[in-house]
Length: 107
Image 1 (cartoon, helix red, strand yellow):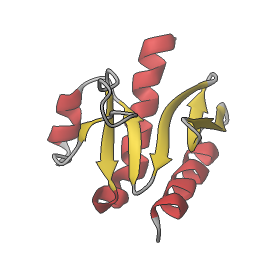
Image 2 (cartoon, one colour):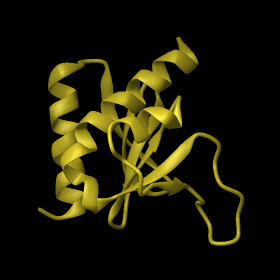
Image 3 (cartoon, helix red, strand yellow):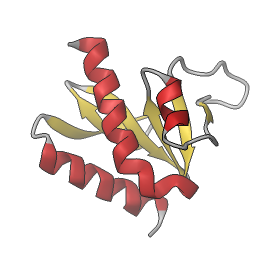
Image 4 (cartoon, one colour):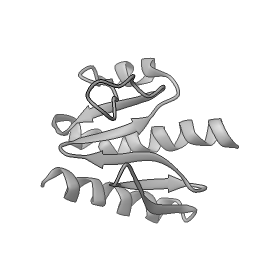
């Protein structure tokens, strides 16, 4: 599977579990939203997620992440990280964790 197809599959799975999610866009890339705010999106060969605690990523074995910088020379976005396609088998779980982080932030 390719990154975009994999991400669309992640969205399909989460939409089946949570009726309050919607497809959207962030930085012109496909995203999944909770209450109108994106918590995960796909860009090139990476999924970018919002996280609450980076330690959780390390605890499940996701070590090759980096802070997300939307533009080459820009500052990284706070609490957003890139997850390479190498970890695509974990994308659904990671997107669900990003949803939980978003809920903590806005509920």
